[in-house]
Length: 368
Image 1 (cartoon, rainbow, N blue to C red):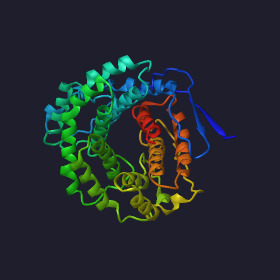
Image 2: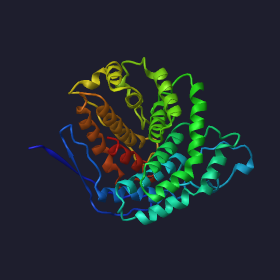
Image 3: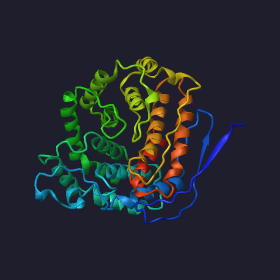
Image 4: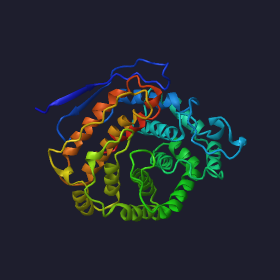
């Protein structure tokens, strides 16, 4: 009989350290065997949805990350970013909206689907997107959120584009001008980037290219897709023996090695990828390969809590790799272990993690 590992997760979600709300105890069942990939129950989806719902329209606290050209640039977050002013920072707001769309797609009958749809309609209006575009056109903010926020805009656009729902079609059309601007920014920037950025935080080049490739593939933008593939191969094709033992760094929420591998899983054929992976991460194919989960010492520290995000992003990278390459099914078990460790940490999470970690959890679960 297969051994079942049952994980009881009590979610007490909040986007405010002074607000806590008790909810039911959803159950995730993860098999120890390497061939099982867990999905969310509707109870878990209901609880995860509460994270973006509590912050996508929460203006403060807020980290703007803007360059100020004059005193006229000193405005409230909602005036600067009427679509994406919540969730502490712009990129977290973008992937908070993505989380709402993804969960509504997977579970149309969520308890708070009506209010979620209303918020999406309000925030992603045509008028608000025009204002977001205007911000990127300011002299000192043309590179705003390069490329992490850009990548999440394209992931949101992809999710809306593939949502078989009238609201999805309408919102996809609403954000199309911003999406077009972001794709043009990518194509302008990539030829000038002589060296990839190999860090475990926002500017990681492989992560930015992965989500961009997904979007280009979904909408059949062959020109953009080929530009990404060409640059990825130029950056990474000759890489070998990536030092996984150097990871993680203390503030990582992305694995430099695994992000690169999951990108190459997208852009290479199956035989090409298997050959490349055997040189890049040769130890990964060992059935006894071990990868210890990242441990968080203080979840009220906005940087230290990044490690929970690392566990989720490692999980999705491992799942993507195992799906593309033959003989890597054992990585699914490691991915499950990372998800199991960090998913309960969303319980009563402070705003430092609560404003963004739900997105990573959802993407990890649905990446396979």
